[in-house]
Length: 548
Image (tube, rainbow, N blue to C red; front, side, top):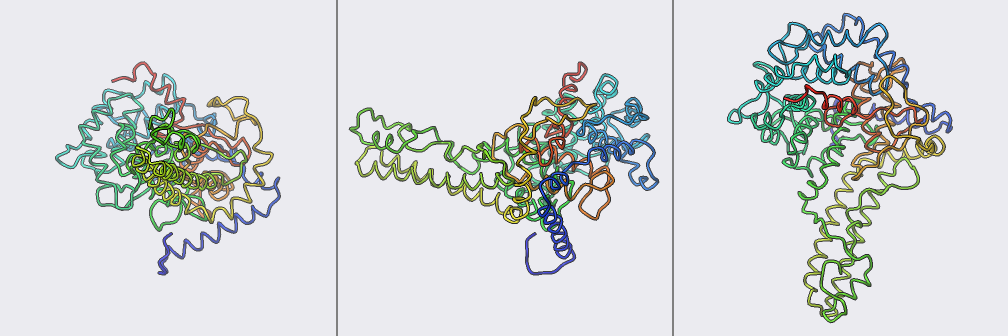
């Protein structure tokens, strides 16, 4: 939170929340290693029991979600899939499929309930739920031709501002663009034609704010949910480079709470468990966009250079034997600035922070090496001294930009260090040293075995957020004692927060290559764009009737 000295209801709540979270983390920090490990267990069985109960008769208070019934199905089915848990015995898969079929409008799209108006949001939810259930019965329920027609009807002509209207006479916001694109992607429909028809790219660009995040509509405040929707919609049509990525990354990394470790949805708001996905889910997409980010910051993708200054100096002089004034003679390694994948061999809780600091030092070292090479060339009266000096300035500029980016991404980790470093340091000794036997995902109906790896796939780019702190927040602060997950301590659990807390936990595990707590905490991997378990999405994309 940005402190301005003005006491408000929100700032008071923030102070109270930080005090509460600090107490929780300090208690964990003071616990012994065995007690600490037990305190970081994902309460899988309790969550499964809680979720399975939601597919049966719900209390009367749920009447307020009568127009969101496909969403309830998705939240629960997706959560169970992430947990590798089966459906309840007394709720067969066919019953869910039959109910969702009653929500499908004969003219196209799905409604929030039977006999209601079709809407893009429940259309995405119903399709995602059916894809997650998988199999012939579920996938054949979706009428692709009428769904495609419904999506086409939702487009808004670019002359009228573009985008998608969520329903007949409904609002036009970034949610519409995302749900339309994700639905089209899962069904193998022509999402590129839909995006062009709606002028979607320009519409979403206009939703990016001065902060860097995206609002629901042009002129609205930057918001985590809308930012994910806008970015994911653009990634689905290969147009994310149209956004101001440096500004977006700057905003996103500052949304992670420095004490809590969770994410807030907007500036100067309290953290909320659901943003573990809506904000945390931005980073897998942003990491894939690093080449576009580098292009927008004018950081040169330098060619690979010789590894020693002696080689460079020897080749600098015009009369040096073998000197050809080529780029290969400059004593700077590209990896010294752009190698972002190294991980510490020790599994300390905050290795991400240490890596970013090492990156800053490496960038500065590279610039110094380049300047030294240029001075040596000038002293030798080399013909290419001016060229080498120019390269040195480029390297210095790259170093400065990278160090600034590193500082922004590390700004909010200092307080977390005090809490998480000691906690995770003691827990990372024995529980996480098991060698994986296989990296294949467990079956949908089974449970992860004890040997599932805590280190998953290594990220190809730097981690832009603290996955360790996020997982600590989710495991210690967002699990309800009787099952289900919640907004924050003191709040009751619900299916929405359970879904997106688990989605954020899964994303952080697979993107960060790290599972906090015992290996049984590992969840299945979900597709980062559509948020359905990966193997089910592959099945849907290969379904024979899935091409229109």
